Amino acid sequence: MKIRAIVLFSAALLFGALSVFGTAQAGNLGDPSSLKEKAPAVYKAKFDTSKGTFVIEVHRAWAPNGADRFYNLVKSGFYNDARFFRVLDGFMVQFGISGNPDVSAVWRDARIPDDGVNESNQRGYVTFATGGPNTRTTQVFINFGNNHGLDGQGFSPFGKVVSGMKVVDALYSGYGEGAPSGRGPDQGQVQAKGNTYLNAKFPKLDYIKKATIEQ
Image 1 (cartoon, rainbow, N blue to C red):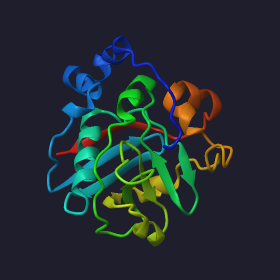
Image 2 (tube, helix red, strand yellow; image 1 turned 90 degrees about the vertical axis):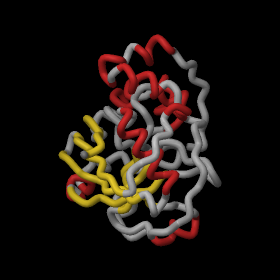
Image 3 (tube, rainbow, N blue to C red; image 1 turned 30 degrees about the vertical axis):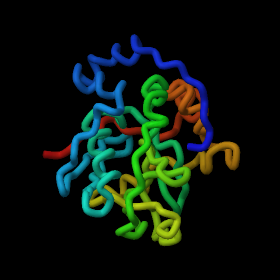
Image 4 (cartoon, rainbow, N blue to C red; image 1 turned 135 degrees about the vertical axis):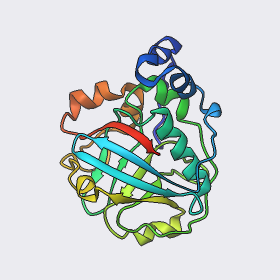
């Protein structure tokens, strides 16, 4: 998240996605300020992935700002076709950069205020990634282990995987840590080039086919 790349936003490309996301949803994805619906007190988000399905149960009381942002992102189709680009065995799996660089460009600085840490980063708990105070945007991670050390760093869980954790465990982890620390995807390149970069350089990555709010 610390690496920034200049990406020109193409309205024509983004709004050409109407057939994928639907008219209202595609328009909203181009305007983060319009996606501010208050989430239910408790809701479930279903993720249909290349490895199978898992479900995240979100509790707004744990982290209201995070729960609201996640609700709006899932509901708008933001996570559809996104890759699990950082999968570290025993630690966590991270996702939440759009496969469309034009969408990434308008969301990169759409930050939300921090929430207090009311739950611990235990196995299966879901938390927004952050690069410092009040920098959360769209990236989230699922804890593989009990990462209690993250609690004191301000990482605030907003939900937990309630079914399909075996699917999460099976997500491809062969690329390891991202560049420049490892040989995995460079987040700056993911932001700038999206799935074009990932498909060419990291074709084994698992991905989200579709994410939906369960009624």
